Every structure is written in structure tokens, then in C-alpha cells.
Image (cartoon, rainbow, N blue to C red):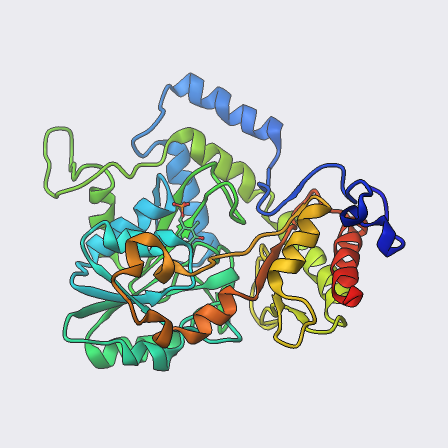
Length: 390
Ligand SMILES: *Cc1c(COP(=O)(O)O)cnc(C)c1O
């Protein structure tokens, strides 16, 4: 990496890119390799590969403890975990969710022939706006799925109030919110259930994986049956089910990564603060603010390009990509504009003005272990020069 001292040093002017190697968003957080190999040895000795093995059970216990919640039901990925939770809660008809989320939240409903109904978000938190949720309730509505976007909690209390008032079930997509809190209580304790993703790009990963957290004994039992074809004993199937099981090798990765969590948060937070410092004085851009009173994992560094910025979001992304900084638009253009859903809501744009606006302004910046303070400074400089050139 070379440092940039003037505009003519930018790759856009024919110079080599500031970073010789591509800087990605969502590089995996990796734990200790030797510890992982020890778990692999154990698996080869026990020959227990799947079906609620000892490592999966240990992982569930530790994740439940970490979130101070009664049950953690581990699954093969976050999407199946969402589907199983939705089915266990017996949601049907219409379910309200944000459009500004990863497509899996909507797919998990659609896959089960439930209509996803998109409600608009709050411009500051990027999470569901309770007033917008109220507007979307119809006689067919059976539930609400809040998304704790970027690890920032959805407005849990307000959504619970709406759910109680209208006899709806409330659950959360907590794929971004491992180790985060809402009003001092750990995520996992809200609504009927909360769903985590352990995909490689997430704060905490098991290669692929996910889990449902809940304090409801019956619901947990039901989901344990559903993830294993409904088997209750060797020859007895007592519930419809699917294959949502987590394997031992995935659990091993999780156990290793759990030991590494504090370091990852520290590093993420350092990076987040470095970006804040480097960007918040620039005209028209700001870094998404986490609530300093809560537990945060700082996994996402989200820059918003305001209307008062002299260049638009796409121009900034283009400038970053030219320097090998592969910053990303996230959840653009919104689930409601993706092919499977756009025909359902021809007037969605009228109902989702904030969603559209936010989706057009967000840049997710590279972070994680591989980034030095110096490289963050360089990324900020690239943005600075793009903005101030105009
Ligand atoms: C990653 C993610 C999912 C899906 O999880 P997988 O483990 O990849 O299936 C669902 N919702 C959100 C918000 C996500 O970020």
C-alpha cells in the first residue's frame, strides 16, 4: 500500500491503485487454527459428525449463556433458521418486515407462501418505523419480523406494543446482532424468537450456520423437532420437519471463534472510531452512529452520503473501487425492487420513501482484522479527495 499525497496519485488519473490488493467488505473473522485442529481430531476420534453432536450442544450452551437467554437452537444456516422459526410460530397470510434488509428475510416468508409486506424504516436507525408498520396491518396480517440492522436493535418496545394490540406474533431477524443489546438486555430475549446467522461474513461465523434464540420452552422443543425431520427417538416421527441440522465441524469453528470474540469487537470498534474520525468532518458524509449505551459488535462500518454532499454515493463507490477498495452498496435497491417482489407492490415506492432514500445513500466500508489504521486513513483520504475535487 502506498500513501496518497495528491490528487494526481489517484488511480483514476492513471496511477496504480492505492491498495495493490483488493480490500473487501465482510472478510471472515478467523479464530485460532491450532484450536480448530484439536476439535477436528476430536471429531475424527468420536466419529460423531452431525445430529446434535457434543460440539453443537456445547456451542448452543455457550451462545445461550452469552446472550443470557434460555434456548439456543443451532441450525445449518440463518435462512433455514428463519424459515423454521416462522413455521414454528405458525405465521400465515401476511407478515410485515422492512424492505431494507438482506433478501433472505423476505425469501424465508415467500418460500412458505406467506406474503412479505414491506414497511418503511426510520432514517436514523435504518430499522422499522413503528408508525409505518401500523399502516401496513390488514386482516390477513399474522406477524411482524423486525430486523436489528447493522446490529442496532429495532424499536422492540414499540413493535411489541403493536403486536399485542393487534394480536400479532413478533420475531426478529438478528443476523447482524450477535452480542448486541437493547436497553441493556442482550438480543435474543425479545419477541417470540430471534434468529442469528453465522455465515462467513458475519461478526461470528461457523463457516455457514445460524440459530434461533428464545425463552419459550415449547417453541424451542418444536424447533428442535422441526430441524431434525420431526424425529422423537429412533423410529418415531411426531412432527413435520426438514433438515436444518448443524454439523460438528461447523460447531467446532464456532467454539474457536467464541474464544476470539473480544478481540474481534475491540478491533472492529477501533476501526469504526478511526473511520468516524476520518470521515465525520467531511462535507455531506457521516458514519452510522451506534448507541454508546448498548453492547455493539461494530461489524459494519456504514457511511451515509447526504444530499448536501457534492458527489453522489455511486461516484464515491467508483472512486473507491478504482483504488481497490471494494466498498459495497448494501440492500440496494431494497427487497421490494427485486424481481420476485416488485410485481407484488407496484406502488411500494410511495410507501417506502425512506427505504429508497437510505438504499441510495449507504456505503459499507471494509473493516475487520486485516485493516491497519494506516489503510483506514488512506480509504478516508480517497473519499476526501473525491468529495473535495468537485
Ligand atoms: C446473513 C443474513 C441472513 C441470512 O443468513 P444466512 O446464514 O446467510 O442464511 C438473513 N438476514 C440478514 C439480515 C442477514 O444479514
